[in-house]
Length: 468
Image (cartoon, rainbow, N blue to C red):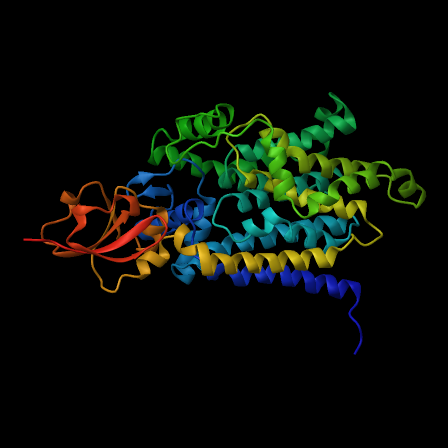
């Protein structure tokens, strides 16, 4: 039997990583808070037929993010039905499209394609986000298209510039103007690095379809913003000023309508990057050494004279999210994700012409660790981080109420039928038997007429009879 070539081994490893992620999608419940919240918003979009304004709850508009991630999951629900796989699958597709864009770019720049994809697919934040119901993978797809389109257009392939503007439109519909800011930082730093302060402005007009591209971007993204403000006046003020200024400038911002602000020390985003980019962030110092200290050797070996420009572009792209969020306190680790495709390309750029150390072993280890993590969730923490298990313990079809606090997963797994109440008096007198979910610490003599059915770490499920 003939041994596999290096390319065949690389393809096998890549397929192992991405298919492992795909097969794990239905094996664990939607977790509170982020995944369950966005999954429930998608379910509500299908149930209500309101495809303009995502809903936080029945008749409560969600102004925190644009609707692309909700459209993705809701469309999948229409096709596949309501399930964990359905709401997660479109985000896996977005990850695969991101890999396809990176593959095209790597091939055009004569970088190793499969190693680039293996590194990207096996980076911690990417492989997790590739199966998570949230906004960040759609944003990363859009920004990857934008950064790739800009660079190829700058090299003289004008049509790629339009791909870049389509990518920016996707970013606007995925997360809003922050997509434009990250793109501007990445490209702006590179233009300053390569051309100085004044020359780039003239070159932008000469090398990019600036006017027609902007019109294309606005034609795709602007109609939804107009419709959203018309449907729920006040959206633009909250979203533009609140979500894109106050959220990041004021670490203790109290204007968040949908959760709590994350007050982190300034500069924490760089620590998030190191952790989220594991295991490949460990290789980054050596990669930069190879690029900038050993660069003369590459020149002697006949490498393209544009190598320096490409390396600097990839570095600016990689760093752009961290530059933006350095002074922000309200941040999450997933905010570094748009720079991760560039990280993969930086590493393969540094090792072009040779094999990235331990490439296959590291990627396989990541796939195995992911399987172990999902197994731990499935057999351990799942019932405490989601209401799926607790609601599955109901043996009868009876009304279900959550007293005082109702997680998003309770709404998703009850198809919106479980209701939140603040007092037992809100339960209709005609309901002689019902399920009641109460915080474990609050179960007392008031519930003598109830029998405990099951409980997780935080809440107990009671079967109650109304006493006459």
